[in-house]
Amino acid sequence: MVEIVKTVGLKKYYKIENYVVKALDGVDFSVKEGEFVAIVGKSGSGKSTLLHMLGGLDVPTEGEVIINGKQLQNLKKEQLTIFRRRKVGFVFQSYNLIPDLNVYENIILPIELDGGHVDKEYIDMIIQLLHLEEKQEALPKTLSGGQQQRVAIARALSTKPAIVLADEPTGNLDSATSHDVLGLLILTAKKFQQTLIVITHDEDIAQLADRIVRIEDGRIVLGGE
Image 1 (cartoon, rainbow, N blue to C red):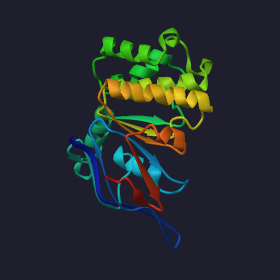
Image 2 (image 1 turned 90 degrees about the vertical axis):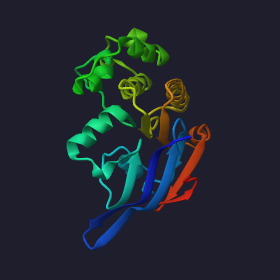
Image 3 (image 1 turned 45 degrees about the vertical axis):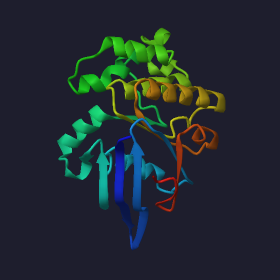
Image 4 (image 1 turned 180 degrees about the vertical axis):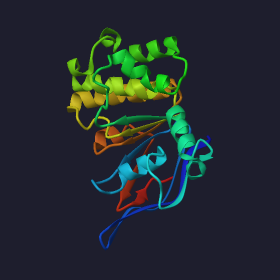
């Protein structure tokens, strides 16, 4: 299987006064196409920093990030924005829905921002898979946490991304809802042959992955490749 995600010697250092924080300290990591990888580790271990690097949301101090054959550090800012919008779907712990837009409008927003064509048949399929048929006209504030997170997942999938990156996607949900939402995320990723990388502190959720990667103090200590 083809490697779709790869990092080589990835470092991210922050200077706070006279102290250097090594958020990532030489990470070599790869993910194959279609794989579901869970990244686990304590708070402050570097999990979210790694995910932000993979999604091109942050710039490394040193090292390479290669996504779908492209070296992100070689892309100009505008190219990176377009690449990210078309190839990567993001799901965060905070749902980040636009309050004045209804569910359907929130889902198709990334496509419209990119000036793309809305594949209505595909969007309807996502909506059905995520059980949002009855909520398409609803505003986010009228939805439960689980429903809002399902809308966020639908939005992440709307552009048909090759990779879905999820940062604690069930962190604000109760245990039962968490497993329902994650089950749907896994189901949709498999259906559309997407690579899924999830950060989680929930060991039960991590056990559902094809591979668990453990990170400590900015370094991968288990399952890097």
